[in-house]
Amino acid sequence: MNRREALSRVAILTGGAVLGAEAFLSGCKTNTKGISLSKDDVAFLDEVAETIIPKTATPGAKDAKVGEFMKVMVNDCYEAKDQTIFIEGIKKLDEASKKLNSKGFMESTPEQRKALLVSLDKEAKEYQKTAKPEDPKHYFTMFKQLTLSGFFTSEVGATKALRYVAVPGKFVGSYPYKKGDKAWATS
Image 1: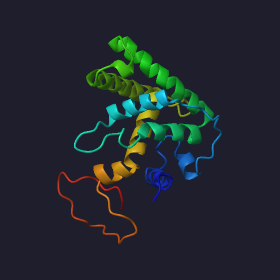
Image 2 (image 1 turned 90 degrees about the horizontal axis):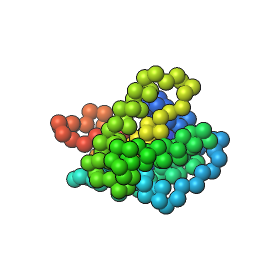
Image 3 (image 1 turned 60 degrees about the vertical axis):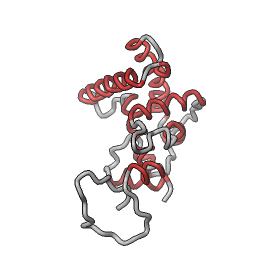
């Protein structure tokens, strides 16, 4: 199964709750303007993603190359208006870091990065409480959703952070589960 197919299945299972899920289902044919993220932007996104899913006993977001995944998804699947929000979000996140830590995100310590992202997550959740359906998504929501999608649909995320059994195989709906077991990447 390739990543695009996995994302389509995730979108179907979650009822299209992932931002841009309709693009996943339609093969990412949207009204895009073809943005261009630099290597520095991808490195920045890798660090944001790694702060959200850090390397521990399992691989982190950088191991899954989530920054590159974000670049492809935003470029190929996001509507032009969402691309603009995403690109501006990179600048806003770095500005928020400078305001909070007196230095850019890339120069901040892991603890400072985490504190910043926790505050942005709270900000995004508050925004969503009052946002109308036609209002744009908060940029941090986009970063977080892409991080989770990119990591858990990657080979390392599915095979090292989750339990994985290659498909096709027979379906066992009552497979034993012990407390503390990893979630399944396949079903």
